[in-house]
Image: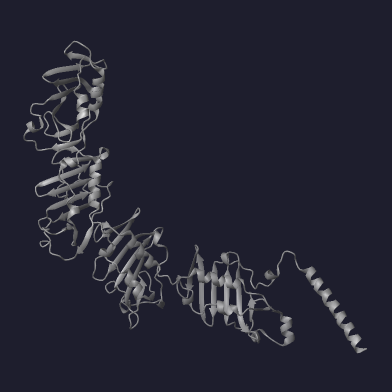
Length: 607
């Protein structure tokens, strides 16, 4: 009897529970998930612009300023954005557990103090642009599996995960950005390195090149500068020592005592980052003090990683001796004893040889010269060597280059920067010693630098002093429309044709027959752009050697305009390289023309 009654009651209870469950399920809103109902705070971490933490007397306040989290209290410093984002994500995931109403507390005979919320031991304040959230943290539950919190000082108490206790930072150092330098190596545009008792090294980014501007002007080694910047930006702070440094000397961070000072300019930044490294911070010397010139903060860093940054000019310089941008060069002068070879850039027309003679230069050959100078490689850097011992007190060669030269009336030699007029923007004067028997190198130094460099003797010997090596191969560039008469002398006879205005060519010597128009047309084209195979020499003593004392043939082009202007081209013997020696009458330059070209030029003018 009792067994039947018990079974009946169990069945009835099951039916009641099922009905209640179905009713609750029917009441659940369709647009709200259980996970959302159980969130402690409905926040969106990415929208937060303010967060503060209080824990047993320690208060930390942070604000997001233009996308960068900054600590405002207890110290003004950069915050580690990744750490704050993790904290916000953790707060977002806190679950909402049991809710205890004031009525329930009254029934149980409990107050806020029993839950540790009269004077909360911790507090979190969050804020987005529209709202702030206050979360006060009290005691743990008796079973230590939950923590009691109060939201926005509401009457209800809510239980949540004990994870909240691990979220709250205990000290400001936990949130500080431990990167010594913020930003990216790719944004750096200028870098200065100052070591104790060493000259300042200044490196500037120009286009794709790193250029050293101090203590010398040279190309910096791109890979070495890149590695240095990578090491600098990855150097972490190990410990925050002080925020109120009053005596930099105590840490070895004064201007005079610092072992290393590094200044970094980044693109888009108004202020420069000036980092200073000082004394050792422990007995082993494995860590040292560091600071920033613009703040009173002191911290420690790894000494071994700082040693990697201690780079001087010799370590960062590109092994190429010269740095000359061809498009900027305006003067190149090479001196060898009493001899001199000088080039000047003449606007759009390009390079001109101005010494030892006035000639148009072959722009390609001058570009090759600049390339050869730029490829001088340093084998060794020698500091403090006597210039006399290196043979540089009376250099065998002097190479002068400049980006701009005086406009007029000022000699280029010496490139005097005190002269009046627009002198060169940048000048470099390189002194080179003579090669020594049995030595495969020569010494070189720039006039304004203390260092002496050792370079290959073979590379320096490739620089030719012969102006003919650089002369433009075009020796005749007449306007065909200005030619009025052409005279050919060959084999003791003379032929001439002429025209007036735009008329047709007519024979004048002899006066009978017809002008050979095909030959005349070819000569007009050659006179507009006559190019040589090579130049023979510039100090002619015996023209008979070339068959030019009594020329085998000659062509004379008479021009309109000033009366009497004409160009006479003389043809001599065949050269050894199957060409023909030639020269212009009244000039002292012998050159070689293609024999096939000469044969077409000395054909009969009159038929």
